[in-house]
Image (cartoon, rainbow, N blue to C red; front, side, top):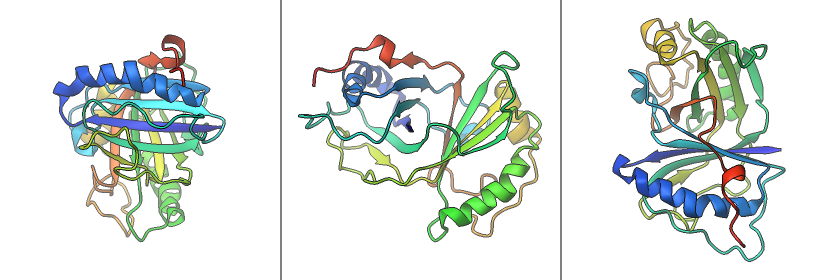
Length: 249
């Protein structure tokens, strides 16, 4: 099974009402023509103090699980254009994490859950294997020393058979930007935003910088260029298969 994870960022928060209408009335039913096994979305929660410096995406995350990367349904020629411009990151990952570092033994009621979801890519000239050698062998071990961290796992992004390029998808708003050339998605959980602040801002771990770092401090990748993140809660805001009928064709 394949999980598609899509990060959304509004260029102007005044566009929120129009974006919500477009998603509910048009985009979600049209995506459901692909017959996903699961399709949920999470609204981003306010960024903790200092978190906007980590490539904060302000709108939502969509996740849908399918048996495989499905082709377009018969007769599907286009989707309803976006009502407002969005910055979008879309990646495919395995349905289960590739690497599980901490907290797999937790039960749902053990702790409250405040999820920091990040997506990143290694710099040009650094292979995924070379980047992962640092991330898995060095960085992940250091991250686990964060004082407020309760859960930590990661997905290696699946190679895209048809890379998403700006302007290719007909439903994009002219000012939107969509990309798929990312290497990993990771989740770090805390009990609340204060737990994140303690772990990342107030009592940071001393990290080992990779030789190829493009940013002088954690996360060692340029925010808003090679690193983006957002914060969500444990429960989806919307479970689309339960509340929205699919489009006719």
